[in-house]
Amino acid sequence: MSQQRKASLWVFMMTIALVASCSSAQDAQDNSERPNRREGLGANRPQWQGGESRKQINPRQRDAIRKMRERTENGPVPAGLEQCKIQVGETEREYFINIPPSCQDKPSPIVIVLHGGATSSGIAMHLKTDFTKLGASAGYVTVYPSGINGWNIGSHDMYSVQRRTSNADDVGFFRTMFDELIEKKIADPARIYLVGGSNGGVMTQYLVCHLADRIAAAGVMVATLPRAADTRWPKPTKSVPMIVLLGTEDPMKPWGGNRDQMSAEETIAYWRRQNKCGSDGKKWDLPDKDPRDGCRIQAERWEGASPVVFYTMQGHGHGWPTQRRRANDDVGKETNDISAPEEYWGFFDSLRSSKSDP
Image: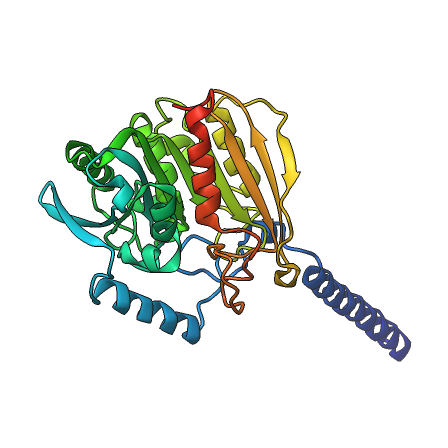
């Protein structure tokens, strides 16, 4: 082969190599800049306790959870609460109850508050929220049930990655607890209300699907539905008034959903379908009582067989709004514009004179 042909061939091969190299580099750049199609579903976010796309818990937050567990699961029962134990099959279960003087010796409204997955003691919600304090002035009994390693929402494989969950018969637990509270003439059977946050909020919705005939209304805090609920949970036997509060910046329950969890809009649409609500809702903005918190709230209400109320908490993360100003942490910012217990009880109490009252 002549020197000229060798030189030409060498130039040709180098040109091909250079083009390929540039193409690979451009592809790599394009891929790095091109959003992952599943990124909006949270596929690339760190996983915590499996399945649910969440931020990683840092040591400070983990230590706070540990201290809460020690205080609520191993500490003394706080003043004002009575510990009650009931047998569910072969398992002894517990709940804590506060009966204000105005509710003594007569069937009264009951607000049952479910804790999240960071603890297995109902005491946590007594310490974390103002339901007990509000009950004393509003005239309702507050009950705080304890889960076993979280709440059992039906199956370990509800999420794509294994997560800490319970095998307990929680539906049986609540059914037995309802029966006891009614038999003891503590609960007005027509006014049993449920409220839950996070894992407790998912469990609240699960109980509505299983025990709709026993529940007068339900409130949900920072808890969207698992996608499998649409096909694997039973449908409620009747409509149940619902009030749902969700944060747009929730790192634990992503607003837009992911492969395991419905989005906020899908969750609300689910309950609107169950309650046969119309498509047109009434919207209003809540007062911005604390401009420093960086949050605003818009509410919407749909009428149907039973009403559905939805609070969009703009900027809010995964905490309970209590109007107790605190520093931001791993669960995101917290709105100080409302007290969640007051919003839930206001909704529940309004149902007495409403046409939608069950």
